[in-house]
Image (cartoon, rainbow, N blue to C red):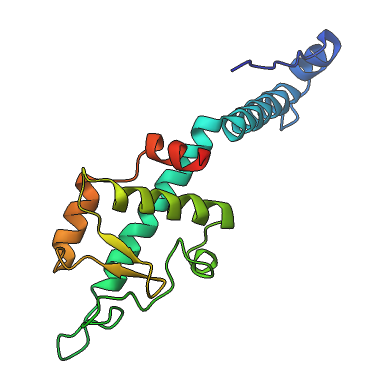
Length: 172
């Protein structure tokens, strides 16, 4: 990152040394330099596509963590509140759903990429997907293999969404 430095003119520096005023001009210039450096650094970070994708992946993984907590919520009798106990159909808005992305503070584009990524995971044989899409009912279901919250969190720990996966899903 380039550092921008403003020079204090000699006449101002002489006046500053001779006066006992506060705050000093040099201090003000140093503050300006720090502020400019911070702003330029923020712009560079904001423009970095790698940083943008990484932040989207972090948001997606946080949304999945929150969704897991929500899906395994039980009522006073021990039955799931947000998942149909018979069909395993998910009953709450999903982060990648048509309306759920708003509630999960995501963007529409991020939800579409998220959906493609999870669909790709479901179709790939290398991992057992936590979320399964049922085309007949046009609904997402929770895989019964993950019978309790700890197993679901463990799955997410071992299989978080990665930058590479996100990029592949984004290109489709």
